[in-house]
Image (cartoon, rainbow, N blue to C red; front, top):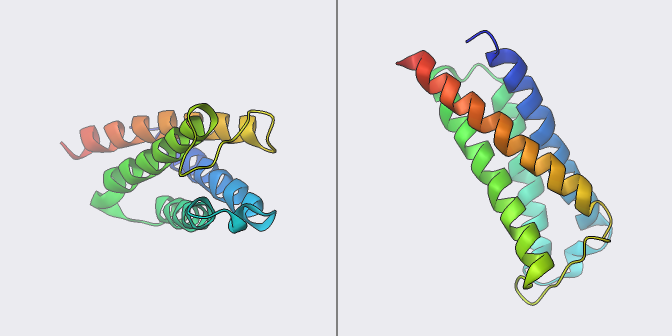
Length: 126
């Protein structure tokens, strides 16, 4: 699959963007929200770690790193949607919140790119 490296790079950029958004919001006051604050910090750390792993020569583990990245983005997107609709851990968000739409689109794109990468990496190994 000729697109492996471009997909790895794009996936890494998207995960790093997701991580940066959560780190930025954590620093802007989300850290003071019970349960949600530590979740934002964990999201930032996981996003940066997974982005770095996508760029390293992980060999046969590439598909699993891509799957982990897609699942991290999907979990983050689910939390965003839940917090906006029914609330999450007592916290209710609004689409007017800072970086809400940017987060939404970055996470959707990360899910798509990393899923394609995971499928491509799996086929490549077969």
